[in-house]
Structures are given as structure tokens and as C-alpha cells.
Image 1 (cartoon, rainbow, N blue to C red):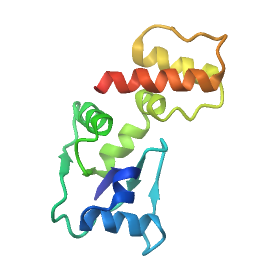
Image 2: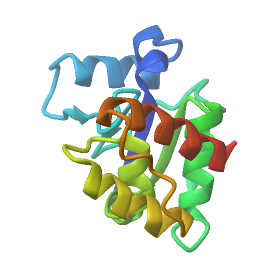
Image 3: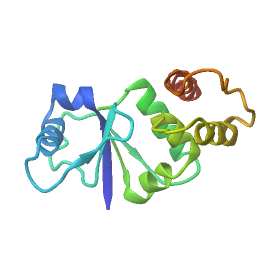
Image 4: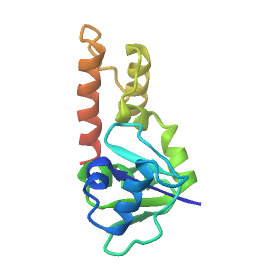
Length: 145
């Protein structure tokens, strides 16, 4: 089953029928609800019915899926990204996705994922967790720019 992801800003602007349907779902209309892991994008476990005038990026599974999705989210090049739910589920369990979202409660977990992605520990333990989160989010977005 296909899922989709769109930026909160594009959903709120609702410039086409698909984004309007996502906005409706996000506001509680119907049985579909969206989830935001990163405060910038919303994932839905369904795809809107009407994709008229919607710039859709369809992503196939495979090794390059993470790069394609990451680049599209970073550059906000499409209204909607559509992929099989398994592609998104696989993405959600990766260290790079956890760094993208930066929903850490401690520096240890952040450092562990950072080392897994970048291969080095460049985390300055003297900085606050919030400061490190901002720094890491910018670095992750640079990976996909």
C-alpha cells in the first residue's frame, strides 16, 4: 500500500486537490491522520484520490530510495512524495532519519547515530543538546543538498 509525505507548509497552502485532501486529513476530516516526525513534514498512510495539478515524486524501493527522498525533502522540489509503506518504514529505522528528525533526549544517542552516519565523532559534548540538534540537522540537510 502506498503512503505519502508532504511538507507542512505545502499542506497548509493547499494549492491543489491532493494537498487540500491532506490538509483535511490533518485537520481531522475522515479516518486518515498524518504523523510528523520532524516538525516540517507529515507522513500519511494513504495517498489522496485526486492528484490533478500535483507535482508527485514516485519513489521505488531499493538502495537509492533514501537519497531520493532526502534530496526531495531538503529541496522541497515536489508537492508530494509517494512510495510503498515499506519504503517509508525502512527509512524511519535508519540512523540518518533519526538525525534528520533530531528527537533525542540525550547526547549519547545523538552521538551514536552521528558516528553511524558520518563515521567520526565530531559532537562537542560541551554544547547543549538543543544546540547540537540544530547543528546536526543542518549537517544532515547538507548531505542531501
